[in-house]
Length: 259
Image (cartoon, rainbow, N blue to C red):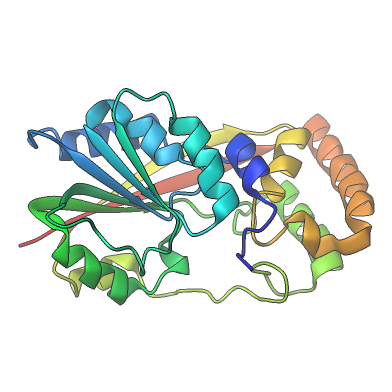
């Protein structure tokens, strides 16, 4: 079972999109390509492809979770570009013969992948001047503020002290910087952009977001999910009334190219 089983409807509705500044960086990255092809790995519900469709001519979406891919298909159905959907993992993706990507995006998903295997695959199916963009911004689990600390403690009352990664699994943190991983691949010229942003949440948005994650998906709470939601809503409403539900986040964008 996927780490994100049952999460797709919440993911599509409550996950923050990619910042406008990141869209500009990625648009510029493919501006010289005559017919830009985007490969979005670990695409989730299609947020990245939707944000970038005006910058490219073709989009290939790769996602191993069937429910996520179904949401991506609906989100991308009316775009005025060619869209191909691939129900597979990034590691198992088989590029069409002669096909090459000009831009590869991996957003909030690189930590789930066999990183060397994926980068080796990309070496074989990308244009000579292609850009590999690895992006992400942490989560409300890793955020540090009074309200996120209290929320994390409440989640742990129900799911245990360790961060979960779906039913029956705990999260295996990848502590090695992605810059180092990329530098050891064919895409060894890496530039990094740290985009600061402030998000303001409502209690309903936070709960919807939690249900989109592998660490607080509804099945993790079992028959206590309604009790958890009641207590989480009360906790969040109290914090919203006192200091607000503000998240100070950094969205990191690594752009990697061949030497």
